[in-house]
Each structure stands twice: as C-alpha cells, then as structure tokens.
Amino acid sequence: AKRLKDVEISIPIVYGTISFWLGKKASETHSHKWTVYVRGANNEDLSAVVKRAVFQLHPTFTNPTRIMDSAPFEVSEYGWGEFEIAITLFFHSDICDKQLDLYHGLKLYHDEDSGPQSTKKPVIVESYDEIVFPDPTETFYARIQNH
Ligand code: SLL
Image (cartoon, rainbow, N blue to C red):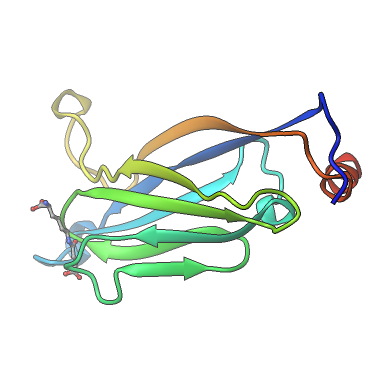
C-alpha cells in the first residue's frame, strides 16, 4: 500500500477503570462492579483504528482473556480485589501490523482520606495516551480525514 511520508496520525485515547461499591448488595467475592475501557479521548469511535482489544483479567475470573472485536472496547465484571489489567490493542491491517500493550491497575477503593465508602461515589482512574502512526497508508489517512 502507498504510504504518506512525513505525515503522522496521532490518535488520542483514554483507558482506565470505573468501579462501584455494591453497598448492601455486596458479597464477599462480589463487593464491586467495575468496567475497564479504552475509548477515544474526545469520545471518537475507535473502531476506525482499532480492530480488536484484548483485556487480560486476573486468573481468578472465568475466561480471563476477554476479546472485544467491536466498540465499545470495554469489559464489565463483578469482583472483590484489585489487580493489573493488560490491554492489547490490534489495529486494522492497513494501519499497523504491530500491537500495542497497555497496563492499568484496577482500583476499587478510594484513598482513606476521601471519607466513607459510598455506592454513589465511583472510583475512576484513567490514563491519557496518544497512539502515533508514522507514514500512514493513503487509505487510513483518507478514513481519518472524514472522521
Ligand atoms: C488480591 N492480587 O489478592 C489480588 C488479586 C483478584 C480479584 C485480586 C475475582 C472475582 C470472582 C476477583 O475479583 N479477583 O471471583 O468472581 O487482592
């Protein structure tokens, strides 16, 4: 495919977790409901770029490798403990052959100084990143321009 030299496409993304304590509905193994996600930093649909997102959960979960082949690229679960989630992004074949590995620490509990635990105050932790694609193919460049 024809590539555009001296051109760079930068895709801003946000990835992270949001976690709700279940309060009266909490049980020993399901104290929280949480979601891990990757999205466009300005809420763009990442499907134009991302073909697949794989979320690697802790082995205590059933089927810990979660493969998402369409947006929204996210996984929701019930759990009791914090752990590091590996997120691997795969791109459309005319964009990039290499995958990108991201790591995010799931946080369920507020820091101690933020008052009592509440079902109405989710714990949100996010990272911002930019995926840079140097020398993009013409097809990819055209797709992004009309976005
Ligand atoms: C810890 N190192 O000990 C961590 C592991 C694992 C959390 C946390 C499973 C939920 C389920 C779950 O929440 N695992 O059993 O359905 O704190």
